[in-house]
Image (cartoon, rainbow, N blue to C red):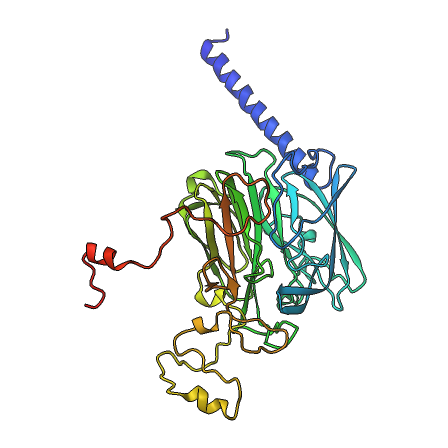
Length: 436
């Protein structure tokens, strides 16, 4: 006789066995997909399966679908790149850009990347943070032969999970990354959870040594970098991030600087860190912040609702990283009284000007002649005066009722909401004695 307890036990065993079978089948399907089987889901499409990423001052890599596989073509090549008006540098990059075009895929996509080398040196591509088969990892000599000049190699793999990643060479990294070879790699979730993202931005952080008057990066530099960029541009050439009031915003940050970490600070907002180069951060692990440390070789993605209109700075909080072509070997002149020194020196050196006695603000928008192919340390015009930051700096522009994402110009502050000089009556009213 089968007792009730026996029947329950056998039923539980059957359920457990069924669960094991289903998990085994799922693992088999995942394995087939990873090895190029036909069980991969249909390729994810922009504006259908995900909100496309905007890369300020950059572009997105085009793809086509061949037999259910997303096919991309990366071209490693020399690039003539403008960091800001007045500074054009001979770099290396991908498809005519540094950083290279942002790659967008969807979790589960089967992808095929053809990489053509038009450089004068061998190269590879490493898919930084993406879990790929060992032979697709891009480490020259260890997991593959390097791609010789003129050759085209093929990489093919299935995207295992969503996250914010990067790509770059793993051949002579000091030179090739130092010349600008890097790009963002975004894997969207197959089934997104949480609120829909309205604006999704990707920004690559990097640093360079470009001596005034020269036109090539010094890739052997280890400490004295003087150009700090967002998507290989310095302010005021960095495109602003244009957002409509009330939209949910994601900003993805990748750091392939040679040596420096970058604490990126956004004014006016608190955000949550939602992604790393390890993938999506569970909601329980997200915490509010308005600065996020993006370490060398890592990525972070932050999210927030744009509920405060205005022009909000976003910048690295390393103070030297918000200046352009700053020389770090000048003597410290702060507080030095020059006592007519300029007039005396100008008799033998016309145009001479002592700088730094009152800090670096005198350098903002300086009109003195510069070496060829150089830019001032600070020279971005703002609505009130010169903005006293450059380098790794951009502006989040949040507006109500804008028809598109063109630059809307400077924010028009409501009356009474701008800090101005205090009047004598105000000081007297509040008992402030400025002479005490």
